[in-house]
Length: 261
Image (tube, rainbow, N blue to C red; front, side):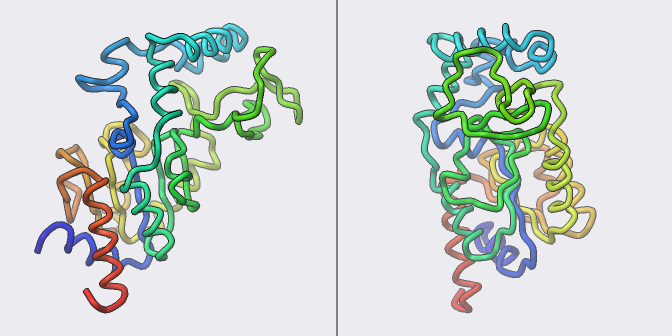
């Protein structure tokens, strides 16, 4: 039996399947990765404005530098913003949204901050590293869309509590919001099947989720072009791009649920 059919068998039989996605899925939408030979940080070095310590020390200086970098070509902040602004969900994103609409996937935990899952139609979505299209108050946690929010005075201040506002994306050294992290662990504890898509398996705490799920008896399906540290945990490993394989897995899963596959 091929990997497509084996993955579809597990998903069709699942009572509570969830997905964990990483940067490899967004690369197929033209969004560059950070690490690796062609990564933004490999090319430019890691930008300083990713550090929560720097933000907390001087939010005004952080925002001034951030807004300047976003408007100035030739740095990783500009390149990433430009790529994400012009990106669209690929067939892999759309297939995951379809699996959710079918009732197969109950939740998607994503390490990506690009909002492409939501644009594709996913609704049961846990963005463990935040979302670049939103702003968040570090005092009360209130979120708001960045679009339409003119940032003229820096740092921006929360109208609700007077706290300092930052991007919703989780920086290095910044705790993941507790409610989000607790919800992710709850889904991992509940699932009987976990679909891994485009995740390198090297960034914690998300990298721990497959091992936790497998230890509880969950089936693990991996879709990735190359082996990862998570591959030994997988019951099924489909090697290839998610944009090509996930639509096939979704179609095969639908056939089985209809009793025709």
